[in-house]
Amino acid sequence: MKAVRFYGREDVRVEDIEEPQVRPGTVKIRPAFNGICGSDLHLYHDGPMPPAPTSDSPHPLSGETLPVVLGHEFSGVVEELGDGVEGLAVGDHVVVEPLMVDGTCPACQKGAYNLCEQMGFIGISGRGGGLSEHIVVEERWVHPVGDMPLDQAAMIEPLSVALHSVKHAQAKAGQTAVVGGAGPIGLLVAAVLKAFGVKTIVSEVSKIRRETAASTGVADVVVDPANEDLKSVVLAETNGAGADLAFDAAGVGVVVNQLLEVLGGNGRLEIVAIHSKPIELNIVAQLTMQDRQIGSSIGYANDHAEAIELVRSGKIDLQPFITSRIRPDEIVEKGFERLITNKDSEVKILVEMS
Image 1 (cartoon, helix red, strand yellow):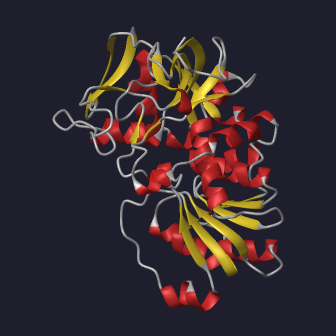
Image 2 (cartoon, rainbow, N blue to C red):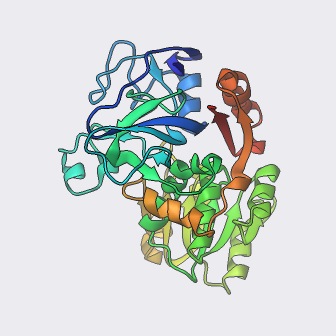
């Protein structure tokens, strides 16, 4: 079968590999669509980094070294069921929660498997990936999506990241939240907030991304922080009280400081983005004297079913976030490279596997 495999920095190949076979407790899936994620982009441009293995060091759970099949944001159709699998049928439309966990560490034991000490990802750490003609995964990670279009279903994984962050921040209907950054995750965080009945103010320097936030309806108010006073806008929209919540989806220190400035008393800042550099905060002035909180969330745990229901119920429409569709053999030129040169105009590029 054909698969897209990652060999190392700027080395991705479409090639023939052996087709996987079902085992007891597993499900064989024919991938339909696979989204390109920022993690895929970093691997391609920067080379292997955890949770990816290297050519010499295998991942502790998969036991695999490079090359590995890419693709962890994918939807597909059930082709075959292993012995003991229940609740699924051949032909079901599904998505995969693309995790591998040890099940024995303290985090796993208390149900927070997104914090597993040996965390790995299908499509990054081994065990196949969505950028292939077939994949076999454990039953526990397979989620049926009913009649949801399979292209939209491929976005359930990043939507689950956004949902997890909003739930972690304890967002409630009637609150006001500011989202800093309108990339894919920031837009999806705003979409979840809107579905929860939260008023959303999206702050973004890119004109194209601001237009996307507005046209998709996930933002009640859109602000250009480079040319507008974000704090003044937030105070005007909250009758002087400041925001209840703020979400950092940008991953830069200046945004964190902007968001803390617009929070009201008892407000909470939730960090969703991955920061590559340390930042400096004035704890007393920015947190203590306002009784504020900072939280941070990663990934998802037991969130996929709720994310699927948000889409199936019509509370979230994922279609507007799909900006391009490409073939597997176009993944470098029209996928990775386009996301670098045209990142503001792309939200989610899907690789169509059929």
